[in-house]
Image 1: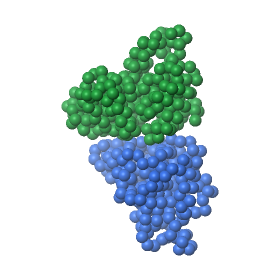
Image 2: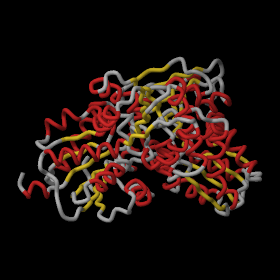
Image 3: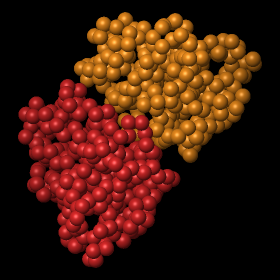
Image 4: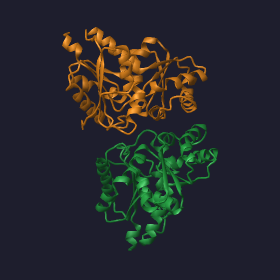
Length: 270
Length: 270
């Protein structure tokens, strides 16, 4: 591959700001990469919309990002990953990676017999993780659990203390009773609650390992860049595009990204 | 007014299912009324959308309901009430009542000097309750607080026990420190958390009275029907129209309505 192609940015999109946890993981693993993040915050959440609408929105996001020139597209949104990958792969001529494939692959690699998946109602209802795991780890039993309070807890920044711990215990108890060996965090918001989730597992006397789909996604990105000779050297950079800037945007994005994003543009893709 | 007009239903709409708490309050106060509820569940939430979009959606809902023939339209959605009432009043030739006017009127009537308003980020950010109160109770000081976790707690049915109590205490402490005399529940979801909210106020040694905007709305409906000679006698009925039926729809609507809705139709108004 030419240096020009290596220097192109990786495009990452999500329905809102949660995908910044994926950006954070990619930056930790591949600090030299240039990343352009698109948060479709004006049309969040995708999880409650029809598949046709999610595909249309995803194609809008992909077109917007690829107009910049990309070497790879990362779909950080669980809903979009579960319905829009074939359409996006037909649309773009660069690798398109999805967060569900990445999370399922990480689970398959660790050889767990029983895996717990927590996610939003949309992700759990879609059955995307069980379907993906049935293909690549057919002997693995999958137990799913919705955890709707985790998103507002993460967005509010209530990540430590009694409330997130109590909520996590309540969501995780049925999974621990099924003796899960691995817990997959199937939503981009959940990594910021890692501490409460780990504490709750400990309280419930579970030794389940936590697999974070953001970290799994970053490993997939690194591997694919290596395989295709697309890894960049030098100093990385991050540019953020959002379709709406709600109140509390800066604090919330800093929470997900682990630092305050400096280069943020409001764009209109509708 | 003619008996024909008295027999027409009251139309009620909200962005999702939360407005069923308003329907429940109207049915308790005016049990003979026929009610048609429209929950625009495919396009929920309205709170994150632009005013122009909320007005367009609200006009869609109003047109759909008024095609049935109405004697009154009740806007149970806080966001729609704060931006769309003038457009809806221009569109329809029946009384159009909004939940924000109703809640503010109830606060003004009790003569409180300091009132706490809790609501979603959209409602609090719009400043609609303070603006309405400034007109009808100018000496009343308004202290606002967003309470984003209350909606998923209500939707999950986590209405009793430690988690909602802890969450309520955390949200209400800053209001109690400002010595509120009245607490207005400025979101249609909150009435199902009444017990936890009252418990938290007690824990914080506050004697603030709780004003429920759903009950306030029902009183406004009753008063307006009386004034215009539109009160119906006989046996009431309820018909529910929704634009999407998400998983858990039945349990959730039963929680807000206080009973299981029997006559539910899925419609398409987009």
